[in-house]
Image 1 (spheres, rainbow, N blue to C red):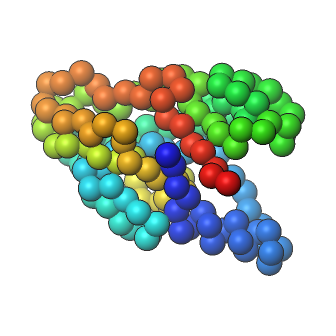
Image 2 (tube, helix red, strand yellow):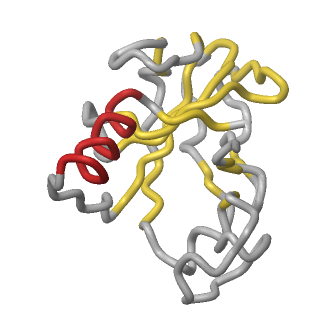
Length: 149
């Protein structure tokens, strides 16, 4: 399950209650962590080195399912009821050229390096990534974001 990061929570509060502008990121960047991040800005240990790079996922109906259901590309904003979105295509990281260690978590940022963490979560099953392994990937629908009620 995904959680919302402090940056995103604070931006949403400023937008909804204080009338401050909020533009969604045009692209989200998926990141992997060996120590899972938490709400605090700058938390967790992101994978580094060995061909690792965050993966860009453009914010679009084609790339993220609508709240109407898995794989939905419905345009009607707010017409869904699931409070869930997921990736409509695989999210594949570069193949590791060195051992990355045991990946335990993920996050979505608004930049390819640095930037602000919008969402984060723990993997359902930790994954050890060794040099020469196949490129780590989230299958279609596996990268799921739920706004809990």
